[in-house]
Length: 434
Image 1 (cartoon, rainbow, N blue to C red):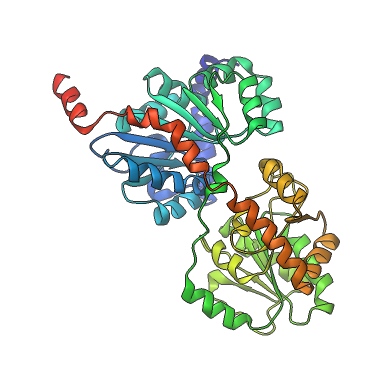
Image 2: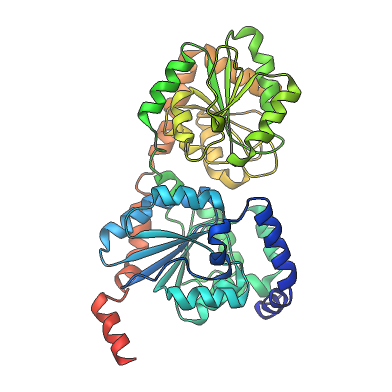
């Protein structure tokens, strides 16, 4: 596969792509009101002055760059930033959390015509790509316009690395278009170099620099009063196939933990009804936050199927199991609960967070549990032994806060490129000469 062949295939596949997008719209996975953005049609005017384009695939990547986004905009006062993602959930989150002079657009689907339409409108002065989502047409067209591209927080899972090695004619020119690749760690840097990235450094993982997740203090107080003295634990960012295991873990603990309350926060809030059906089949008494159900004395499992409230439930629950790790999904961010004094448990599938999971396990800051029996045992021991829980919480907090200087390191690498951005008067002069 070469970029030219990929370009031809995605051009010819237009009917299939339209069918695929129509199906996603029917499933609620596309934003109907802003669907034109997925076809490269801008949802707003381009702001005057230099513009940074930052692309982050979804929620996890978007959260990891919020601190860096704030830092860039604070230090470069003339700059605006367009942040693209591909999911409805990430768009809603960014609408609430992006700083002034930054705004969200959906990334266009990777057809050449739509990529060109996007770039024709926005004309970014620099493009920052986050982690590992490489769209060949969009990257190649950005490179063709001589727009500087930098990879931030780069990573390459072992599975993706093996897959890309089968397509060297495609990945090598794509990575070759990046002026600089900043990898999460040395292992990721080695893989990026092996695939053809010409300039790679490893300043650290931006997820270490994320601020604590936000919370509505008034709502936290209200829910704490509803929970009272009941033992409570959290299953965070769960995926399909994991809730059944969480329910079984609850069933195992309930006889020895009177009044036990399990909180489930599905990774995708629109799965709330699906999770409720799991409880119904198991004969459990559940409540849905999206329906404003109260946490009643008889509520066994509370489904928090709302957006942007994970910080609230990390603060309410002393023990958190992190989902996406009982299935081959790759896990979710362990540092978020670690920053909020949760004792952390995760499953065996932590491929997307290998370095973090390994460091936390070695330091005694997390527990790995791969089935309902082991999860129940781990949660019960942490709920019952306050001293042991406090030790794990402290170990996790030390890891989560030890590398707060990552943004400084990344900014040092980005500095020369950002300082080279055209100033407002330079852009006006260029337009006049044109």
